[in-house]
Amino acid sequence: MEWLVEVIVELLAEFVLALVLEFGGRVLLAPFRGEPSPWVSSLGYLVLGAILGGLSLWLMPHSFLHQPALRGLNLLVTPFAVGATMGWMGQWRAKKGLRVLRMDRFAHGYLMALSLGLVRYFWAG
Image (cartoon, rainbow, N blue to C red; front, top):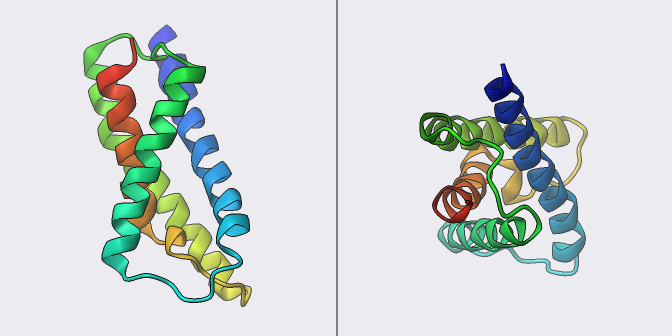
């Protein structure tokens, strides 16, 4: 039963990081009017996810998941969950008539969470 708590804590930690990125990104990107190409944005979200993964290692150097199979499963499931959540937030924002950033799309949320998860997967003790 302890492994279930570990999975839930790891999933929640990545969701919190994605939400912090969502709101922080809006504040940081507000002054810029033009958006770069989707490829440049994708690369940017990969790099940003890796940076956030490195920062998360500084704050939480050990993985919540200790079993290798669960860590691998988390690396597969969590980026999809984060991407789906970000896509849902983008749809919600579009319905409200609010500006939709690239982070509000499945692919960019997925890429950010995947790179964050990969950093934690390989370097978290």
